[in-house]
Amino acid sequence: MQPKKNFTLPVTFCQAQTIYIQMTLENYQQCVSQYADFLYRFILKQCRHEEDARDVVQNAFEILWNKKEEVEVEKAKAFLFKVAYSNMVDQHRKIKKMSYVESFPANAAVTGAKKTGLKEALERALETLPAIQKAAVLLRDYEGYDYQEIGGILNLSESQVKVYIHRARLALKNYLVSIENVI
Amino acid sequence: MNQIDLTNYEEFFISYMENELNESERLMVETFIEKHPELKQELALFEMTKLTPDESIAFPNPEILYRKKALVPFATILRFAVAAAVLALIITSFFYFQNQTPTNENTTAFTPTATQTPTPTAAEKTSSSSNSATPAATPTPALKNDLIAATKTATANATPEPIAVVALAQPTAITAPPAALKEKTLASMNWAVDQAAGLPFEKLPTTSSSTLVAAAPIKINKQGQEVIKLISWAGNKLWGDDDYNPDIHLQAGFFEFKHITNHKSK
Image (tube, rainbow over all chains, first blue to last red; front, side, top):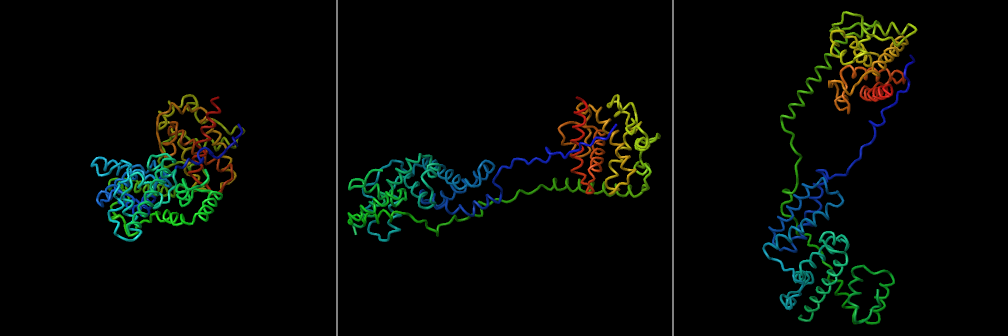
């Protein structure tokens, strides 16, 4: 009997396995160092309560950690904003701190109009906006998200986001005009 | 988009400052402002509505958000430490006993001192048969006929065991086998292939002696494992590869074993 010469390397054994890009501990720590402040500012601007904002941010990171196997690294920031925003809305719905009626307070421009400084005036103008407009414009200006990304975070369509942002800009501009008139 | 006029200019101004307009639309807005300079101030006001984040606001205590690496329980560390110690002991004793055996080319060199076989070893048989016209002589007919029965009486007969010892001892003991040894190897491999061909390994009892065999999708008994090792080593020698990697060639042996047995069974 002749010796067998058909020895081949086990290719199947060496075949590369599919690699899933999962969030590692290092990725998560980077998210904390990069996004915690942004997220906190975004939430604090809306709920105006430091302790609540802190809880919301902490909760968002807790959820990110628990779902780190499902969340892609590149989408972690948007995930955090989405989770934090919806958490904040839920919280404030419970305690009825926020009004979701899209109406512009009639005398909002007059209150505090005596104070000067554009930044302060804009801060006050922002307080007069409906919550959803405020969130949209904050994501736009603070984070530089486009309409589609904002829609993803706030659960809105792209065109809805555009409408809200346009209304917000108009309201903010009108507020500034009213201050000028008063001054 | 429509043409800009005094009824819709605000919408255009917002789109302008939001960077939503294309080149021609931007030009249209700029031309409109030139025609209506009183509205220039209004566009400036829209530009002023852009918010800037207050960098001084930061999350108060970020340390609570960071995570630490999960600590490995002490019991787990202890288990690994014990496993490492046992492994070290086995390796040390292997080299120790190997040094105790004679190093000449006689087949007894590859027979363990603890082997309880009263009969001539299979390696000897294959060695002698390699010099004859029929190199693939069968060591025991019992093994060919019924492997499970042979497994049960393996300790008594111990015919395949010396082959196994040859397979285990050779790769580390010899780097460049002489021609006579190569012939013996070919003969041994022929025998191993014959044996492997008759192995109904799906039905064999589980006896895992290495991680590869333990992780294998099929169950291979001790004897089958030794055949795999032999094929891997012999295959390595046939390739003429001087750098013997036990892990890679053990895997190769496993696949060849599967291939050969599948082929023969068809």
